Length: 278
Ligand code: ATP
Image 1 (tube, rainbow, N blue to C red):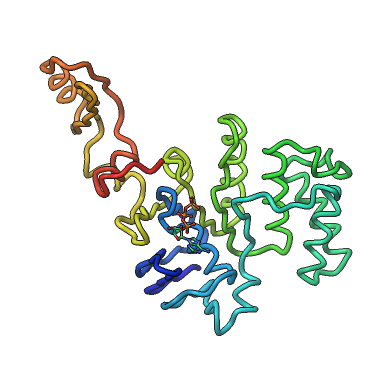
Image 2: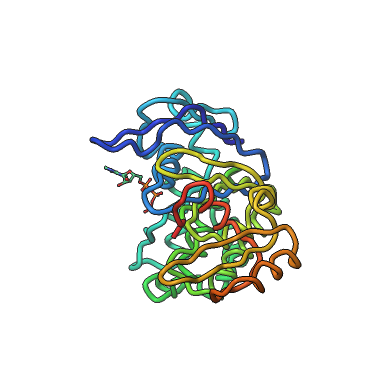
């Protein structure tokens, strides 16, 4: 559904993307995980036709993003990282405008927006001014807006950034529900938990390169299941073990203070790059 081949992006003096290759399958929920500045937003902006790649190609549902730009644009809905709703308009008006921009017939927009507002649990906010909505509601409205023209692909750039933990979980539930309807989802995040919880597969992005790409389970499996964090002086070092018993044995033999925990995706990322994601 998404095919990226040898994608490169150079800004003045900065190599933001250094040759990205990946394929996202139909119906898949794919997470693009990396620290600030890794190149996540740049990738989405290129796929969405908002900026041009310096080299390489990409296809959305078979349509090349530059030579078949119009058809490619019809394949996706985009939820950008920063809120870009019109606060002075109502919830319904924001969706209507988006529908008009997509040249959808008025009746079709009305039907679809009624459905979507219930779907994202904003049915009772139809006539509310957007400036009066909470952060979580605005994010749900942006998701509804991106789905208005029934795209096959949904791009979510940091979908839960700035939201508190329980609101974030509500957004995650919504994202899962959208995937279950068959929409292919490509999301960027620097929240390890988000990728671990949601994604079928994860690409680790570091300084414009994909350093690993697999299911969360496989990415973690190489390290083992259990970690012992050992604290000494100013230093924190993690040690990995396949069984809890091995980990406990190691911990019992250390003089330093420690915590025993499950291995997570952050461990895999750190081991591969030497860097934390966030
Ligand atoms: P973040 O989560 O902070 O948005 P990111 O992984 O999405 O990080 P990008 O925004 O894609 O990263 O940025 C990748 C690199 O390209 C960074 O070094 C950034 O400073 C640089 N960059 C991004 N946009 C521009 C631009 N318009 N002009 C110059 N450099 C840019």
